Amino acid sequence: MHKEYAQNVYREEEMPDYFSDVIENVIKRIDRPTVCDLGAHAIGHYWAMGYIERVESYSCYDLSAEAISIFRDLMDNWQPGDLMKKHPIYMKYLYENGVIHETPENIEKQLVEKLDVVKVFDFLKDKPDKKYDIVLANESLPVVDTYEEFVTAMQTSYDFLKDGGLLLTVSGPFNEETEDVKRMQSYKIEGSLSPTSEVFSKAMKEVGFKNIETKTFKVNNFDNYQRLDICSAVR
Image (cartoon, rainbow, N blue to C red; front, side, top):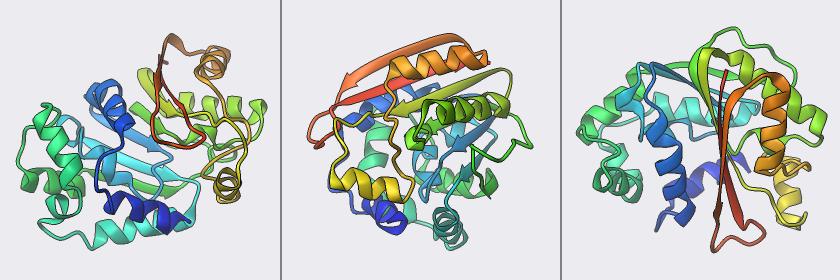
């Protein structure tokens, strides 16, 4: 499942509509020195393409050892030219909308050289041993099954941040537990709780976040996922 998830990014024939909402409301906001991608999965470099020229380093954590292994192998075997060869549609969007400005060669070089920590990490059990200016949780925190677990995950996000640090979250609650959803749940790519932005805001307040902002966007062409919630908060 993790390999399939990663390969889907490389088979893109068009960029999903909601990706533009993520880029405009999340990726463009990443402009501080250090970034923690909490739940990077096997594609930790993908969203980093859009912010890498504005940061000093990025680190990728995921609870799946398989996903981290796939990502490590990808970065260890990165070849010049891979960026435009494997992600032409995404890169075209980033350039045309002024998200990035440097050459593909420089973006590629920074993706490799600025990669800091790559680590298997369970945000329900493990404790952060480093602090960051930004924590990006892109469709990762909702893998939990209960609200209590969700608060624990939110506390971990809080603990990863420096004082004044920014948390950016992306999530999409599902409408019902279809067989596809259950399959993702079995691989911890999805959870049972399916929190909305309202639940995100509640948990953020509970662990001490401030300056909480939420936005909801409509999602098209995705069965069982019809809304995208983007939230931000400051430690």
